[in-house]
Image 1 (cartoon, one colour):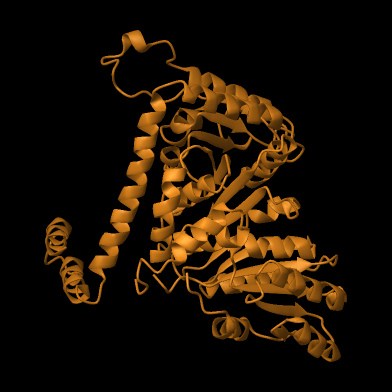
Image 2 (image 1 turned 90 degrees about the vertical axis):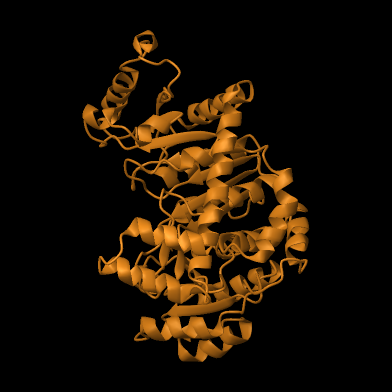
Length: 135
Length: 329
């Protein structure tokens, strides 16, 4: 069976407590037929990387509104690469200034979804860009 | 199935996973979940190495605190420096196939600990509280050195008892608000429990719930002499414990009870029957999958659809349709 559902980790790294967006997305992706591992608030980069590794997810979706994205997101990408998961698609959402987006992309974030992005757009991006799987 | 079974990827992943690569183990579990040829190949080398681990099923109604209790058990197990794995199953949507895997959120404090491996599984349409491939996944974890594996089921109702066939020890977790003693008299889930835990012992009413459970589960005890046929299978007589996953009250006692149950089984002849039951659950699961796959293969699809159409219009009865489909296999 090669048409298994896409598996996505939705996590909120850092210290802000605003998880409505992450929950809406997790729920929306569920309805898109994805298997969504939801780890919620206050995740350290290590927690995100370990969960991605043990769950063997196709996509890591990070929601961040604290302003610490330039510290936390590159760190997560780095840990994923160190764990041999450099091929996992990393996306981010939240309040991220436009000038920071290129920095994040260089660090390994594939796309940044700002306010107003629809669930459908995000799901389509994930379907198109998640790594092809051989096992 | 597009990949040739002998491609070598399965054997390589199995070797790496056994050698301690968590990345390989994780990828292997993905293959197992989707029953790919890679998984088949890997299981061929890993299955003979498994069978030694203690598989503990944790089941009970949704919101009863199973994940929180498992997290507390993992802490207790790690305090004794034993490696431990968790398989946490959550339901898949019958409509979209999607799922929210939300058990792990209670267990995130072990991120830096290489001797804890937590994996969520979507049930993917399998009924009974588990995913169809949970037993094989547990076998892989077993072969990779996890001597203790917690299998947390989907939040169950009264009759999802499949975990008892897979696990060596089955724990039914109840919340204090489980209902009155009539609930405890009903057939089903409580009958397959080796241990019953009244969780959330920090809440009022927990003691009373435990007392009610104990008295109902003890009803009829000692009456074997009065049975029409003493050789008929009898429900288990579970011990009832109080615990709180939240503040870890009663968790050391629960782990001790789990270990004691495991040790007692090692000295009894019941386990062989249990292992036969586990083997049966696995083989039947694979047979069902293969049958389904065959029925919907491009070559047979038209015949299958045509027969279903006839049943839908009441032109043919479902038994006759099933017989005809079996003949085509």
